[in-house]
Image (cartoon, rainbow, N blue to C red):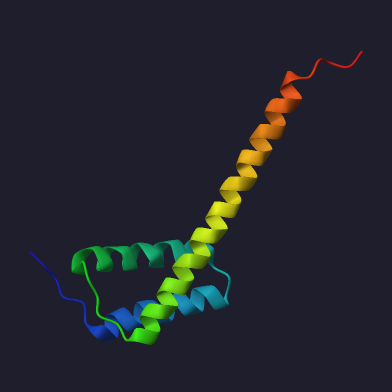
Length: 91
């Protein structure tokens, strides 16, 4: 059995997302993102205006860059911890 969500309902989810962002409510954002994931998975493909598509691609690129930076920092921390662990104890 399927259920249709109207554009009005989807826009309301987006409105709630903006309210959660404006009020710094990360726990709400996780739930909103889960709703959007369900919607995206159900559709498989969504047609958007070019400017929206460009914004989405820019956001994705920013997220990927930040995650790469975090990953590189973690590797550096692990490397430094490994180096510290190999040193002989003081004394």
